[in-house]
Length: 90
Image (tube, rainbow, N blue to C red; front, side, top):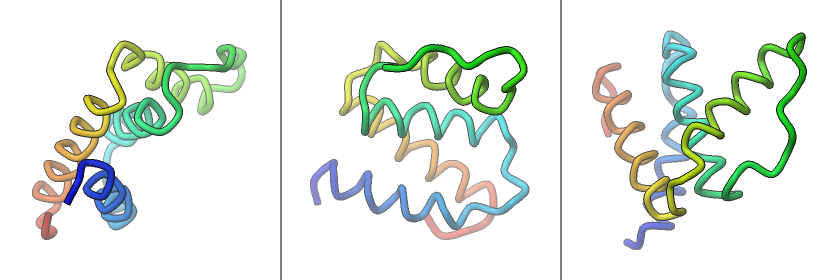
């Protein structure tokens, strides 16, 4: 399987992560996913009163220097780690 197929498989598996997954980990996954699928941040930072979208934007901005392949690999690794921590099959 190629990297793209693995990435898509783990993007599906990420949906099975428990609700108890921390917001910090969810934001890491969000940033890596956006970097892998969209590329560098292409929007302006949301306003200070829009905390949720601002946190998501910041998570994406934090991984801005990664290549698409790097972001995909990091995403897959993070999903595997979170699945193992939750006692679910990776």
